[in-house]
Image (cartoon, rainbow over the protein chains, first blue to last red):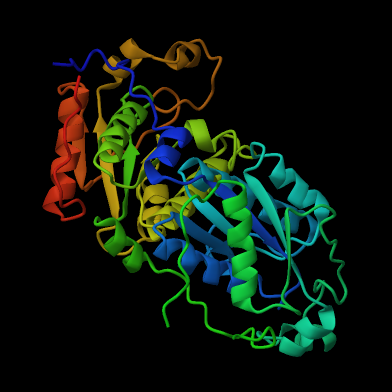
Length: 208
Length: 208
């Protein structure tokens, strides 16, 4: 029996590779970037459902679970936006280490902030998904009424109105929600994950 | 087929309850608190290995993956220590939401900081594990040479030397690493998880 005094007994942490082997799929972050209303969270949640039903470990990080929790001390100044994305990147890294496919859905308008997150990860673990949609269409959808408020001046520094959005230069995936349906967009991303051997098995479509 | 314009299609997030049902076990945070050298990380990693081998989703948060990542901007002032624990609590909450049993191993010397974390969770999800060990024994082990540095004045505000440690008043579990072996401590925690129906199945001991 191990004696208490011998506390230096080596209890190695379970590794990322051990978890990937056990789960039977890779782990990575799908980083959804795009304008408000482009469909980032919608696509992320639809994909999350598909992966979950295929027994793949997935988790969505988005404004709903980050803004009122981990990052509730942060506002919308330039510095706070950068810190917001930095922290999300670090949390995504922990989930990737735990063997999870993370779906991070944040406007993340600045290329530099996104590229800093990319550098936290090993080659192939950071997959930038540009959720492309013309701003006119985003504004037409305006699911949260934010464009209206921004146009009225009730919200300042709103991305696309009075704050810039820098599209990714070399995203791993571009999906165009102005042209394709949610299912088609989800299918494109699953195709990418299969092509890169992140997900080997079939990912069945919904029954409905 | 779903049309792009219909972006308001409801893509509900996968819920914590759905994940728990799929995985076949509950999710919670085991919050290990105690002096440096008491054995928090060692016990957490040994338990993590046991749970992993039993096909239970687990993840360890400790200084190794937090201090140089998410919380690398924080020092050891009173305010930074509080913010350190707050962020770890919020990250643990995300993992619990993802269906994982989180093992958080941090000195977390202040009762108020720990109690704030407790309040983030639903009843039964926050399990405080007091890793008890006399300071003389911790100092004798001194696995990282930190007590020696603190005694020499090379480290300031070291818990137990020139900064207080507030033991939990009502921890869910107390393990005494001065009296019991690592395996015995791990067994006590597994017993608690089984008693509370977090883990229903057998958790086999190591083959070795």
